[in-house]
Length: 226
Image (tube, rainbow, N blue to C red; front, side, top):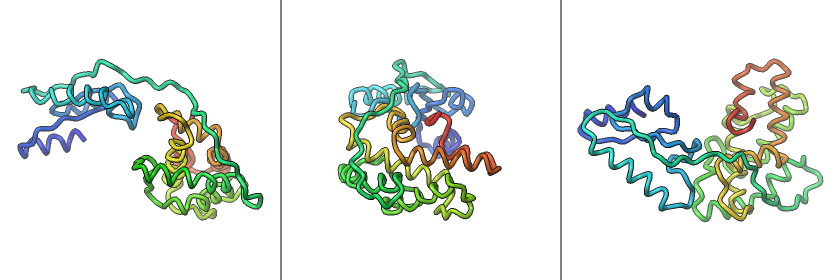
C-alpha cells in the first residue's frame, strides 16, 4: 500500500494511508500515514458509528497539510473485547445430513436477509452460498480421515474455509440483536457452530496426518481462532 502511495504521489496525487499494524506502517514509510489502533478489518473503528468514523477521516484528511513524510496516531483505540457472540441458530430439520451441513442450510435465510440489506461481509472468493453445504461436507470427510487432497475441496483449503466463515458471520448479523464487535462473530463460529467445530477437527486431522503446516494452520488464523 505504501509503495502504491508513492507511485500516486509521483503522479501528482496526494495520498493518505491508514494502518492497523503500527510497525508495518512506520517501516514502509508512506508519504502520509495514520496509525489506528483498531481490530483488523475495521480501519474506521466502530461499525454503525458515523460520528466516530468521521473523526477518523477528519484526522486522516488533516494530514494533507503535511509538507514532509509523516506518520501520526489516532488517539482513541478500539480494543478487541474477546467476547463470543450470543445468537440462536435456527432449528435444524435434516436428520439425514451431517449436523454441520444441515446447520449451513438452516442459516441460509438469515444470510439472504443480511445480503439483501447490503451486508458486505460474507463476500465469496471461490464459491457462492449455494456451495457452502457441499464445501463443509468436504471438511467433514477430512475430519473423518480422508486425505485433504481426496476430499473434493473446491479450491485452496484456507480460502474455502474463509468463505464458509464469512457466510456464517454474515448470517450472524441477522441472528444477533446487535452489530458484533471485532472477532465476536468469528469466535461464535468456531466455538458454537457445528461448521466451526468441523473446521477445527479437520485442521487437527490434517496436522496429524503430516499435511504441510501452512495448509492446515491457515484454515483458522491464530488471531481469530485461538
